[in-house]
Image (cartoon, rainbow, N blue to C red):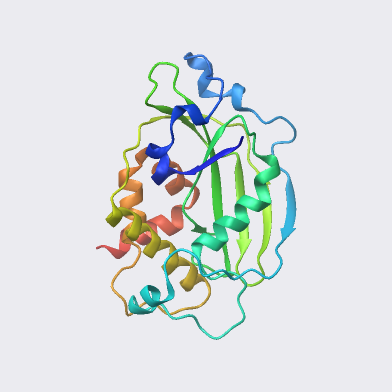
Amino acid sequence: MLLLVPLLALAGCGRSKTETTAPEPTAAVEDEDALDEGGPEHEANTYVSTSFNEQTGMDAATREAEGMVLPEGDFAVTTPAAAKELAEAAVAESLDPKKTWTLSPVLPKSWPSNEPAVVVFFYPMAPNPSRLTEYLLFTPAFRVTVVLTDGTTSVEKLGKRKSLGTINETRPSSLERRELELAEAALVYQVLGADLRSKENPYWGYRKYVHEHPKLGRDLSRRSAAFFGWIEGKRR
């Protein structure tokens, strides 16, 4: 059975839910040959959604209270939860069901954003053979782009994975979850054209996420350097 978990909920996943074979605790884990998917390092394919505009995640009243109002337009995807669901559907057949996978928060395809699209990275994990309460985290295997206007997705298979180290997450507080939900919702709205300049910085949740999850956060900050640099600048 495929185990796909958000990193924020990792602590709630029992080890009994995955049958992943642990790699040997040697230097070879740095290249993570055991997690190599095989095939070409980069490949692209396209999945096109049907009508999809579920208002999942943060409810509309909360978004409006935070000053996030969508501009006029017929958008297929307007929430981070909907974008992640489409990303999961697009990559589902490519994920090895023997591995544990964690999704990144939604991120802009480019920054400053010049198109209504977000990306989600899929990170493979394996049990740490030395400590049963930890997982080995590796660089992402897939980068999925979701176009918010029509729900089109494209999947890019990334190159050979390398170890990012071990993680031992604790259950997030309700405040941490809410801050990230608000940040992701703000990004989706801004990418769709909403003007959030008059609002107090709604992107605090991304900074908090990087702080709370440093190994994954550093990797995401490198892959989306312009966006995270902009967020860092907003607090000064």
